[in-house]
Image (cartoon, rainbow, N blue to C red; front, side, top):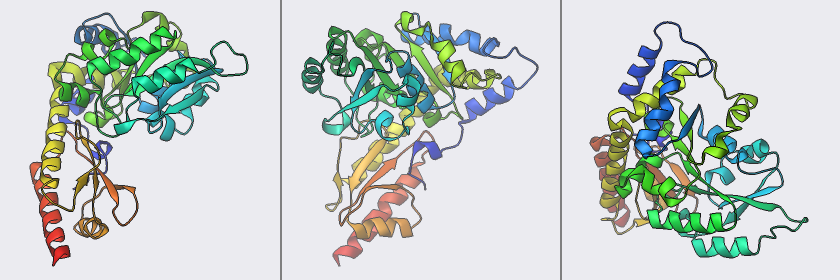
Length: 348
């Protein structure tokens, strides 16, 4: 009954089976294997346009290396203040870009608002030698608040980004959850909307350790192979990353897994709002829930064996609950039952 993160889940059976199959026989190293060689064509089919794909093992590596391809050391990368690249990557984007500065923007539900982005870029000091030079914009889909950008919202951000001669990057650690939530084609919230690079996550949605850096703007891919090698992220046995990614996108497994995770989050949120002591902090649009609860309820849930992160301490703490592809109905039911029992006891 662990709702701390979708990272706590095991590898889904289809991906584990693919790893076992990939373990047979000898294959050429460093991406010359048959699994890696097939990836670009398969992802091009999913996105309905030619793409270049580079497997890496972690989301932080994907984001930092992708940003290094579009932001020089004297550049500025504009992102939300709560973004993963700003809060949770230990300076990796700054390190791999050679010193690019993360310039943070505020916005409700962890989303960058186009009007604020436009105003910020207009006053960014482009061409002034004393200032970092605008280079890239990074958004997260689905966001750190569990919300999603609509296709038209991404399009508006992309239009502003490109008008200032910048590139648009998406941190898509939970990209599958966003696609399912929006019920749209993957192309509609990427290249058709103006996205240049996507970091496509698999680890949180059933993978063991596999992410893909996907280039829609092919010119930006030219130096990435060298950046990946120099950073130590070119695996000699790359087939084990690529086999995960191939299994992940075969027969829409990535969307099936995300559908389950989203459904469980919706069920959990709908059950929680029935209690008067509970307040949802953001719309539940993917597989993350941020909820304000009395401290007594939080302590009671922990005593009942549930695990989750407290996002904000206080007399009314905010906790984060994350569902995954393997979240069970009975776990959600048990959580809601405990909330009901503890809340009733608190009112007595």
